[in-house]
Length: 312
Ligand SMILES: Nc1ncnc2c1ncn2[C@@H]1O[C@H](COP(=O)(O)OP(=O)(O)OP(=O)(O)O)[C@@H](O)[C@H]1O
Picture: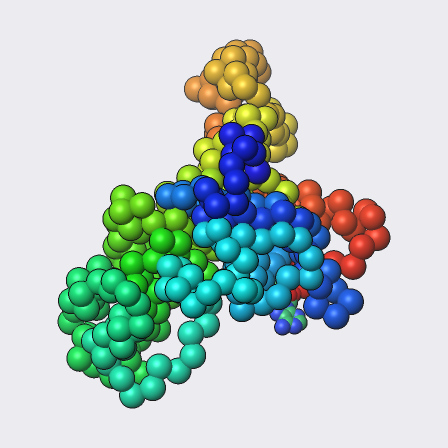
């Protein structure tokens, strides 16, 4: 939770969650999640398989009952929200069932008629890149094309808040880029978006903020370029010393270290005076993310907690 949002009332935010808990049987999945998503914000929920991302989204969609806590989505409790509330949210679930013998054009038209102010079918087909497949049976389309259709059905009603659970799984790289452009267009129209993804570059590209869910709690929450704090971004210098041993040092001043290594290499008579296998690397978002979830796994293991399923 960022401090500037503390004063906001649930009605001002797209999503407002306090102390969300969820258990399945004797397994605790969510242990007290606080989450605020501002109107117009794109928020990416990250976390290992089984961390509880889909569970969280399903609670927000009103299709799963929370075990405890306070949940407000577009100012309403999802479990008791009126019918009209449902048409203000868009859902792209992780698994969409069988879409029957229908074509994308028929399905998009049908879903559009359920909403008060649908986008024209041709506009939706164009937005998701399915114009050429508009008249084909959905069941005969490729996995990536079916996924695009799921997205089409999620956006046809011009939702104020769009939930996207791993939306680009199965997309080829070009389709992913097109999808990103489409989301940027929705964002420009003011749509709030909550997405889950295992693609860190996708989160970095799209999200205003990312939250990392691990071990039942949000272990970090920040804009992608600040995730993990400044310390996590300190560059790592790796090289081999004169004896051939792999060496590694984290330093905020890699230039000074490289200068020292070069001097030492020259003094040691290394041919060319170049440190062996020298590399300077800034930790990527993926490195930082893996550190964050690794720490949680370590903490829980140390505490003797059950790690089945809930961690990786
Ligand atoms: N209906 C259910 N009954 C019992 N356990 C469930 C149920 N639904 C989910 N779970 C368990 O809850 C945990 C969290 O599942 P969830 O689908 O929310 O994780 P996720 O973070 O979305 O994972 P993934 O990245 O694999 O999609 C998993 O261990 C899952 O097996």
